[in-house]
Length: 114
Image (cartoon, one colour):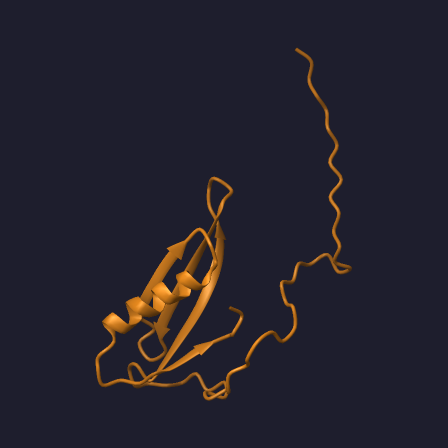
């Protein structure tokens, strides 16, 4: 059996060699109610959300959607999916709604990337 040698040339279309998924302003931009003041101390006053992409051991991707409380830093809701879609976000919000006390009306802060 002979060994097969293959040379692979990778093509990087980004001039600086770094990847960026930024596509410019897309869709509606919400008002910046918090004005970068991330010092709330009352529980459920301000919540933060984000979706993170992670590579698994089998080289597949997973997407984690998380909502945390600014005051306590507690994770209030999270969902994991193999697809970064609207259903992932809706499932995370549904979990949050079940766990939130009825009287609170928090600000939900996002980087608006999704």
